[in-house]
Image (cartoon, rainbow, N blue to C red; front, side):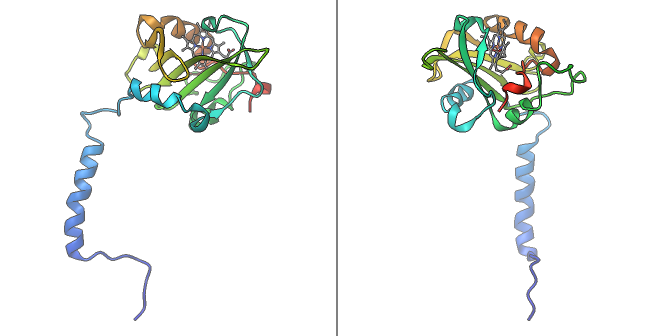
Amino acid sequence: MTRTRAFTPSPALLGLALPLALAVSAGACDPDEGPAREDPEAILAAVVDYESTMERVDLNGVETIHPVAGGGKTAQIWATPEAAAIFRTLDFDAPPPAEGSVEFPQGTIFVKAIFEPDTGEALDVLQIAAKFEPGYHPAAADWWYAITTRSGEVLMEVEGKGGEVEFCRDCHDSMGGDWDRVIPLSADNLR
Ligand code: HEC
């Protein structure tokens, strides 16, 4: 008897598999449900492990102008892998790309971690931008912003998409409007 690698299911198995497959796909893409919702609590939990789950994109630290950090600090920028790959193609000094050509996927997380420039000591502050589902907050291209400690506790009640984070949005709009509200680095400061 010859064996083939092709799997020919018996009619009985097909009878079982088909309703199962239908049930699964109906649950996964019910048109009334829209895209999966991002959960702020899940983002806050995820950023705690940013050094093991995300990729660093700056080469040697960034002298940051971020107002919250007090100015004069050094920042590291980390991103979820897919977003890191996009970020590495951007260059703050290059001519802006075609409008709308840069888009970070839902589920993107950026973490900006702040350090003392002299000692390298990590400050207990993370600044976070996360891309939520389409329609979450069109005025901010669906970005969610927060400031937290390194253990994910929200600081200064800056979290979400409302008035508390408008200043994040405003600056990222004006400086990062060409890149889906993300502000790139210069190409020579990328890793
Ligand atoms: C005055 C302008 C300004 C404001 C306000 C601001 N940012 Fe930024 N942000 C920047 C700049 C510029 C960068 C690029 C890195 C750098 O130069 O520090 C950046 C980078 C970031 C990054 C890394 C991803 C990227 O876009 O490069 C995150 C995350 C971030 N900011 C979060 C926040 C959050 C959260 C707030 C509000 C609490 C905020 N930012 C407010 C200017 C600003």
